Image 1 (cartoon, one colour):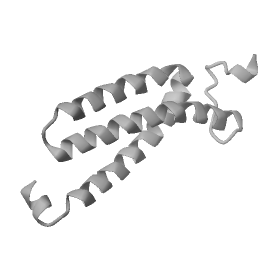
Image 2: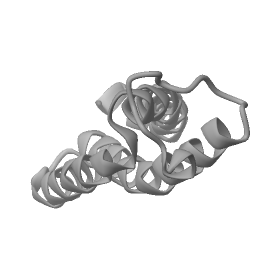
Image 3: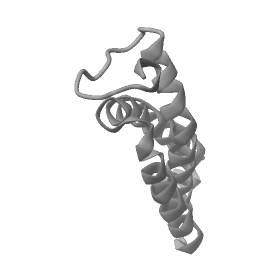
Length: 105
């Protein structure tokens, strides 16, 4: 940690990790919507609350920042779950044949 601070690399590392965290959440949202639909939004809410809570407790700046980024990426995924459903409706992503969609009713 001292090396990162001495060479002013902490911000770059946090930026890189933020990029990777957001990149990981994208396929998670796609798979979650495919298998569970929008009813899984509360999972992202619960994960976000836990991560943000832990970020308030942790003393390490790097870990706290990454927990906060993960928490808020999870909050953003709530919105993306509903947007993903609309992308499926438009035909941009495959439908799950085992599920009934609101536009089929």
